[in-house]
Length: 535
Picture 1 (tube, rainbow, N blue to C red):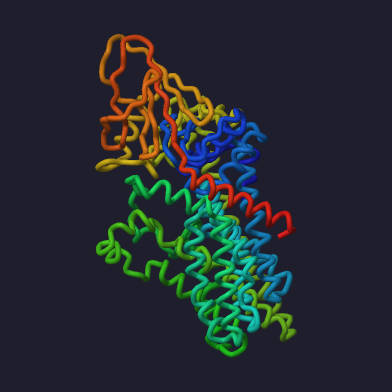
Picture 2: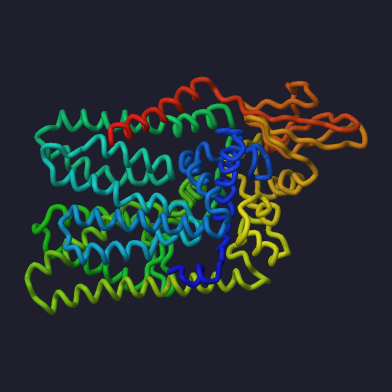
């Protein structure tokens, strides 16, 4: 799938990749220098002091930063990330199928198919929803217990572990996967004779999850309780749904082979309703979710009545992150049952059908990856997707940076302009963030000590100066050794200070609440306890 990219030493730089490269660069520098700052970003995002990692997969951010130090350049880092996501996703889908007694050959083919379409394949654009999709099959193993185990439908420790892990990687996926569990949990509660024990196990899982993710929800409380935080950019929900597309299969788009696979599974279940409760339930519930995420829903009307969904939801196809492993699981169960009839023609048709589905998706992915690699190799392009990005005109220099470095020279050549999680007083926009912060950062010298960010500049005369940093409620600013209290700020909380003639030094620090430090410690200790007992 990415062979052509690897052979040509290409980095597919999209706006998402540029964003996440900055996240991991910041944590890599924290690890390298020993100057740790959990909330305030001191090394990336143009040294603006904005918060990102604390509320977006915090533990994964530090793991990624450590790996970035090891692999030495952005090319190696991107390839390693893609391989890791695909490996985790493939093993997860394979194990899910085997747990449901799917034929091993079919399980292997379904796992390969899972890697070639939809949200998982979105890792080719460095879209981090793919991490949630990679872990989704492991989460869906809980569905098997809910349906098949009347005595103990909730394995509270394994449920807590997988949900906590997903929250530490991609929080939004946790929400969608939790919603996917709801109908299965209701079924299990109605069916089980041990209702009291199931409820107790549920609260055990919930409590354990709260402990293991204390840093995640604690970080959200710190950020949102005292700050106005900008939402992600708005997207038209109608255009980002699950739908058929002739030559694209990333995110919500489906090739004809996948559509036919869905049709096959629907027909099989409708004609074998009583054959398998597991197959019937996972198929119907997954198809309902896919329907909700598809173009058959009136998303144009929905967003007209609820415009905030354009920022909160952005892409309805995300709703299906838990549904895709379930629908493939259903396909595996159906095909396994058909193969039990010992009809050689049926067996051949099943294997050929799955191989063709895999082949079509693989060929499309290879073609897309090849096209994007050629764009990288073209000195007039190099960058694959430039939306919400500011990119240098010196594209060959950018090529060299991506191939042979892992430092901040990349962000001087290209920067991401979306103001996600930026504080604001009235509003925050891409244009304001770019002009007031990204474009002004070059006029200052920066260094980091501990969790403090220092800015140094020379002024020809005493005058008012707007600094290219943002201030949260918990931020503290000093100028030339004096704490600044009565601050004038613009719409994105940039501070206006009175600079003296000559050399000026400002320092920015985020004051982390004591209670959050306690939550962070609780979360870390919780993970150590789990690993100490061998999970």
